[in-house]
Structure formats: structure tokens, C-alpha cells
Length: 100
Length: 492
Image (cartoon, rainbow over all chains, first blue to last red; front, top):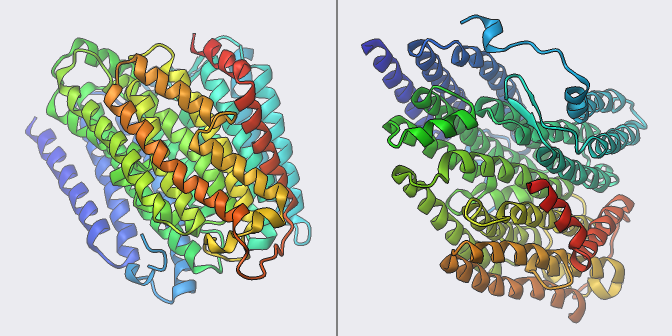
């Protein structure tokens, strides 16, 4: 039981860290890594829940999520390459031509 | 529990196969369009042809098998009913108009021929997202849709606006997806299921779910509000609308909004709007506030915009507010869910048409059209000016256009559900919105053009797309009985 709670706290911690990375870091590569961290924190939480409830469902879904995460990082990196071609930098503050 | 018990393998009967056929067609057609698009000289034309054939075939398939019995696949994960089939058909219609709109625009903006395949892939994702009741399946469908849209947004490769918009959309969209996923995990932990219907039953018999459930529901609600771009979570929308190529903006503004709202409506119906559930009151009043704030913010900020696409993006935020009002009264009033579908359908059509006209007026790699640039264009190009006027009037909700029918249905459903304060806000803010819509018409027809503006690109595709949308807008505005009857029949 204590193990399950520990795993949930770890997942929540990782999720918070990922969120902080996405929101605070100015380097686009770091932001991409932050998104990966967010998805994996959710995975960890799902696996832990399905372990404690003795259901295989949550553990199976993790494979789908991993696949999605891979596709997402591929697209993220290609957008990043495109950004570098146009701006000559991958810092987020250089890309501010559109006023929000 | 063994694998076979979790995911029982079914033998597909004819009804199941026919329900799945539009999906198969779209995916297969997308792969074909990718293959044909590689041709150096004629790639764009081939890909366009394949995409059009695929979409029209899927439309015919879907409408032929519309009234088959309800089908549930993979143990209730995918549910096809006449209702989900017909909202899928509506998305296919948006995709058809989007593909026609892209024809010609692709060469002008330097889009690759993959644009057609990506539209098909995202359409398949949208149909999946609207047909499923399984939260994780919904996440996967959401990603199938969004990943294609991220690429579409960033596809004007030589334009710095476009890559910036792509980056912003990617980061915020990825964040929203991650929030959705973690929320799903927490809801799973609290209720022991990913199925919306099972969660609904769990909540009916369990007045006090654990704290984890509320956190998860909050994360899911936030993610969906991000996707539909409601007020506090709207930050990405104006930039993405400006940065993306205009045909992509039109497709996105119609189809993605439609899908996200349909999915959100399903989640909200099963998890948020339950009677006699004290813990969920907070979420209901949160949606109330978001609806009111979106209407007020969107309409008042749109007034101060001088650029067309940006103005339309803020008006989209305002329309999200009206739609959230429809969502809020969905379970209370008789027939309010059908008024939501109708409003979305009409709004999406006029939105597509408006962006089609903008794409004709625009020059290559232009960020946006300012109001001064369109001055006098209505007199110079009477057809385009008239079409644009029809779309703007429809968005403002003036009678004789479909926008009026949609708005009337939505507001009357809200009134009969007793949600008077929100309706008052909605009516007052839509009066405000008439100002900025009419201002564009004044610029089009009543101002002299300041400098020589000529349309360099005669885009046949965009003109046809605008004509189709205008015909639909007028048809449903003048003779709404048929479609209202149709949607009423589905709601039963």
C-alpha cells in the first residue's frame, strides 16, 4: 500500500517538474523534453494505479501512449528545425513576431 | 485477467464493417494521397484528386449507412449510432470544403502536396474522437488529429510567422494533451475505469468520490477548454490563426472546433453535469464563468483589432462562449443538445467561407489582411464582397442566414432551461459583435481603396469553397426546417 502511494507521489512530482520545465525554460529542446516528462509521469501513474487495482488495462494503454509520445517528439523536432531555419535560433523568445 | 478477457476479439459483422468503412476509406485514401503526392510535376493535382475521391466516397458511404442500428466495438470502446455517424458526416463535409479551398492555395503558399494527406489523417482522428467513449482512446484520437494539425499549421516553411505559430500550437497543444492524459490516469485511479459510461454509473452511486477524482476531472476539463480555446486558455488561438496558411486556418477553425466541442460535450455530460452531486457544482459554475468570460472578452477585444484574421480569431473565442452556454444547458433543456450541434455546424460553415474569401484577397506569405487593405474591394470584386458579407452576417446572427437559426435555437434552449443571466450576457455581447462585423462590410463597400490593390492569384478552389459555404449558409437560413427536423430525429 505504501508503495502505491509512493509511486503516485513520484508521478505527481515528475508531472510538476515537467510542467515547470515547459513553462519556465527558454530552450525549445528543453520544452520538448518537458512534454515527454509530462507524458511519462502520466504513464507511471497509470501503471501504478492499474497495479494496485489488479487490472491490466492501464498497463496496456501505456504502450499506446509511448508510441504517441514518439510521434509527437518527431513532429516537435521537425517544427524546431523549421524554426531554426527561419529565425536562426531555437530560443523561445526569438520567436515573437506575432503579438499575443 | 488475461489479454483476451480485457480486449475480446470480435468477428466483424456487416453492420460493424459498414460503420467502420468511412474510417478505413479515409486512412487508406490518406496513404494513397501520400504516395501519389510524391510525383514531381503533378503531385499536387494527384493528391488533390485522391483526397477528393476519398472524402466523397466516405461521405456517400456514411450517408448510405447512416441509419443502421447502434454498433459498439471493442467492448463499448467505439460506439457508432446514427448520431455519431451524422456528426462524422458533418466533419467530412468540412474536410471536403477544406480540400477544395486548399486547391490552388497550396501552390501559392508553397505548401507541400502532403497537405491533402494530412487533412485526411486528421479527419480520421476526428471521427474516432467523436465516436469513442473511452478516455484513453479519446486521447489517442485527439493526438492523431492534433499531430496532423501541428504539421499543417507549420507548413508554410519559408514563413517565419508560420513556424512560430506551429511552435506555439505544438507546445500548448502538447501541454493540453499531457494534462488530459494525467487527468485520465487520475480518474482511472479513482473510479477504476476509462469508460465514460462506467464512470457515469460510478458517480451516480457514489456521491463522494475521492479527492483524486476531482483533480483528474479538473485536469481533463482544463485540457478540453484549451482545445476549444475558451477565455483563460485562449492564448494560442490568435497567433495560430494568423500564422497558419489561411486554408489551414479555415479547416482548423471549423473541423477542430467542432470535434473538440463534441468530445467535450460527451465528457461533460457523463462526468460534470450530474444532478444532485454536490462536488460537481464547482465544475458547473466554473464552466458558467468561462462561458460568460469568453463571450465578454472575445467580443470586446475583437472590436479593437485592425487585422481580419486576428479579429475573426477573437470572434471565435466569443463563439466558444456561446457554445459553452449551449453545453451548460445541454442536460437541462429539451433539445438543447441538438441546438448545440446545429449552431456548431452553421458556424463552422460560415467560418470556412470567410477564410476562403480572405485567402483570395491575401498575397503570398502575408501575415494578415488589415482593414485598410480590403477597403473598396467589395465594389471591385462584387461576388467575393457579397459572399464575405453573407458569412459575416451569418456569424453576427442576422436573420435570413443560418447563423440566426443557430443562435435562436441555442438561446431559446437556454431560456427554456432557465439560464436567464447567461442568455442576457450572450445577447448583449452579440449586439456588440454586430459592430465589428458590420465595420468590415463598411470597409468593403463604402470606402475608397487607398492604393491600387489587385488580386494576383485567381484561386478557383477557394472561390468554389466560398460558394458552397454561402449556398449552405443561405439554404439553412432561409429553409431551416429540413435540417432541424433531421437533427431532431437523431436526438431521439
